Length: 317
Image (cartoon, rainbow, N blue to C red; front, side):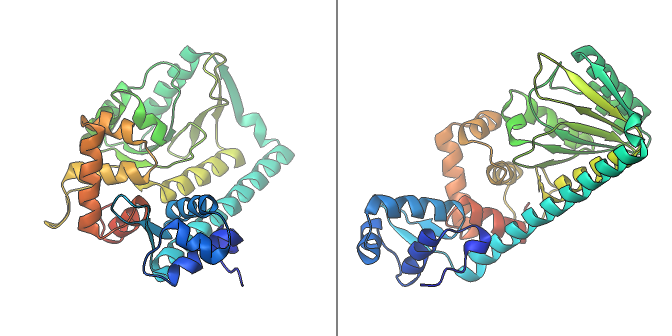
C-alpha cells in the first residue's frame, strides 16, 4: 500500500487506518482492526491522532464510532499548515544568518544587558513612552512584576498602535483576558499563537526589549538598538503575527455568532484548555462545552480543528 501523507506528518499506519475508514461510511475501531489485522487499541490510538489532525471526526453516541472527513478539505488544511511550518523554518534560518552577519560586522555591540525585575520593568515603560508610531509585542508568562500594563492606555490615547501576540498560557492567568478585552476596546490589536516561546517588545522598529530566559529568579534582558539583530527580531515578530489567530474581532454580519461565541472559538483554536476558557468567560465547563457543541452544529463541523477552519473561511476569526 502506498503512503503519500508522510510529507504532511501522517505516519504509515495512521494513513492505513484513514484509508480503511474512507472506504466506509463510519466504523468502530474493532472493525478497522479486523480489516488491518491489528489490535483495536492500536487503531483507537491512530484514530485519536487522526482526529487531532482534523482527518476524522468522532460521531455522537455512546459507541466509539468515527467517520472520515472529506480529504479535499482535511488534507488541504494539513498541507497549508505544513507549508506554514516550513516557511517558519525558512524565516528562522534567515534570522540566524543575520545574527551571524551581525557578529561578523560588530553590530552585536548594539545589545545592552540589563538585570533584575525592576530594571526590566523600567525599560518596558521607557520603550513604550519613547514609541511614536507602533509597539509590537509577544506576550507569555511568567511575569516579572505584574500582568497589567498601565502605560498602554495612555499611549493608545496618543495614537500609538499596539499589536500584541499572546501565548494561550497568558490567557489562563486570572484577569488577563479581561485586561486584554479592555485594551482591545481602546484600540489594541490582539492575536493568539500556540507555541510562543519568547517574550518581546519592539518600538517603531528601532528599539527592542527581550528577556533572555523565562526564569524569574534570575531576570536578565537584552535591549537591542538598530542592527541586523533587531531586523531579525522584527521579521520574527511579523511571522508570529501572520500565523496568529485574532483574539477579539470587530462585529460582523448578522449571521455571525455573538461576540462571546467568537471569543470562545478563538480561544479553542488557539489551544487554551477547556477549564481555563470556562474560568475566563465566567462559565462552567459544562456550559462552555454545550456552547461549543452548538457552534459545531452551526458550522457543520465535526471537531475543533474543522470548526476553526470553517470559521476562518467565513471571516468569523
